[in-house]
Length: 341
Image (cartoon, rainbow, N blue to C red; front, side, top):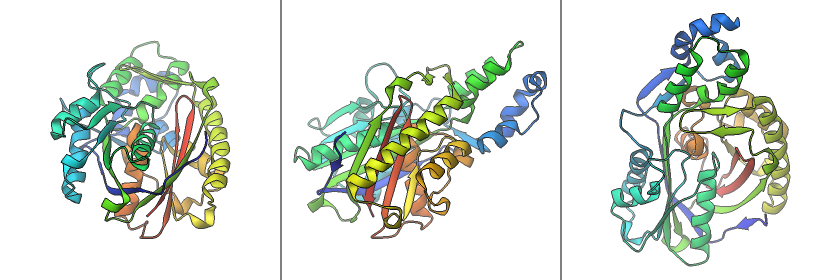
């Protein structure tokens, strides 16, 4: 893909939310105790392998559109931006309320946005949020709209419970455990960004550009449904890291960046093995790549914006710093975005 470069797009506001209900890895393993014993696995196996100690579930009845709406309302409240000036709302989560209508239509209605505001879903697995940002940023850059919202709401409760029930069944073998392991890493979250044209912006946070590459010959290494997510974890890791390496080389060349110019790296986070492998392959300094997966797990399209939000909250990013947003999603697809804070 030709590099996307932006000169007029400002990230005016951002928010990320996690649910209040904490589900520990230890509690999942207690439910799987009989299966563990049959497979010769010791308690602590899942946490040792993934580095994930807990994940979050939304309250019963909270759908992706409600979670995304909460994040969007927080951004609008924090910025005081007039919703009547929003020209587009793009929802990017893996999770959906229904096959139709779109999640975006539901969030648009919840927020009471003007009828002139475009609204639609953009789906690209865990890269959905970055893909949605590029769509809205392109419209702003071209002068088609002056402001837009990108949102995501992910919920892992139903699929995690269904997977645990399945793995508790007699006869579960190691192949089944391995194929369903990724589901047990899933968490829940919501995120929203408000992007505006530069003359409307007050934050100073400028979007610089994005690069993306695909390796769709590996599109079936991770397959998710409402009931389960099955993966080939070894091949997925190997090919994902290889794709990230190719994308990183192009990203640095096209955006004119090097490690010395980047203050913080916000990675989409699956677990310890993936985080360490990507950082190692790209030469990312580990002290500049905040780990958020230990207490939230893999939160799909919310992963990158949530990592940025936490990095900002912890004072890891200051005015004038350049931040790299890096993601790999099933497909396989990889996207990398630069943001001058």
